[in-house]
Image 1 (spheres, one colour):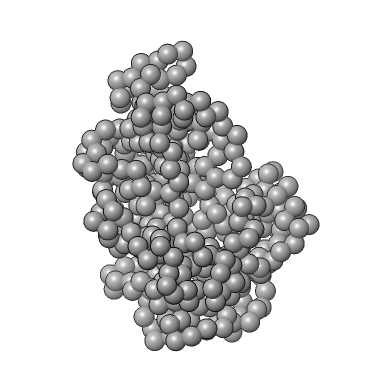
Image 2 (tube, rainbow, N blue to C red):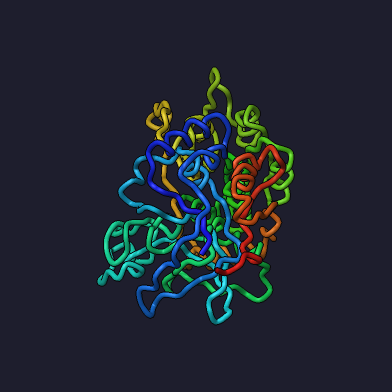
Amino acid sequence: MKALVFERSLPKFAAARVAGSVSGGLGARVGPLRLADVDDPVVPGPEWSVVRPRLAGICGSDLATVDGKASRYFEPIVSFPFIPGHEVVGDLEDGRRVVLEPVLSCATRGIDPPCEECGSGHINRCHQIAFGDLHPGLQTGYCADTGGGWGLRLIAHEQQLHPVPADFSDEAAVMVEPVACAVHGALRLLRPAEDGVAVVIGAGTLGLCSIAALRHFGGDVVIVAVAKHPTQRRLARDLGANVVAGPDEMARAVRRATGAMMTGDQLNGGADLVIDCVGNDGSLASALSVSRPGGRVSLVGMPGRVSVDLTALWQKEIDLAGGYAYGVEPLAGGRRTFDLAFELVREAGLERLVSATYPLERYKEAIDHAANAGRRGAVKVAFDLRKEKRR
């Protein structure tokens, strides 16, 4: 079958890192990603099905991998060669349309009894992502055994599959996985009946979906969105932000929203909750700077190695928490994050965030578009495999 394959090659990885530092997405032209004909993944047992992707999104972690910027932390928990792509809507062999929940938990690995976290529904915290019946891989799209959405076929365990409602378009369905990430990140530190001020830093896919999640699940919270580009600003308002500010306007916007005062170039108060959807040095420093004493920061954007002055974290006793993937949500009565994501996609019309689709053979263009989506007026870019020959 035809697929985009990411191979282990240190020279190509280094070339991708250099190219990606020049311009986002350039790693696709010189790095370890290539279009190839590969064998179909092998179905390991009756609990597994073949999925034929229709649409497969390109996300920030994919771009970091392609551009050689992914953290070395991931080295022991991925296996090569892998086919990327974990934001997937596709068809089963019997014609049913499904969305993939890509985390490879104890159940998918044949580990019984499951680890404590998987047993309680928090599959995103699975202890066993390098063990069991599969090669290492924290998710489908990073595991040599499963395939991924950037290929014509992948395999998935029955616990990874969610039926798509008949009234959902493919564009709506492919948004469910990134929306689930945003819902989990928003609910991670949200308080019941929150009525304070929340700041969302970044207005790409995760940022815009986080705004929608806060508006839908966050009660009367006042949302300050930090967005660079005109399309992002318009969508942030449409999805429920009360205030939209540029990065250089953030401190003033939070000061006005909270009534805080300036002490030098610092706020003496600030936001109750800050969701960082970027995950770099500057965004994390900004999140700490606009958080009130005793505030909360949810890190949803995938960070790599960062260098940040943590004095504010210490002095203001800020709670900093990661927000990886999805599982069950205690704040929502223990409901599965993916069920909440389906609900939010429908209520907020989040299919509108799918801005462009490309066939696999135009992957270099697609990745360039995704890496530079904000300045080009786009949000989510995806591969369209609906017309690909299934050879």
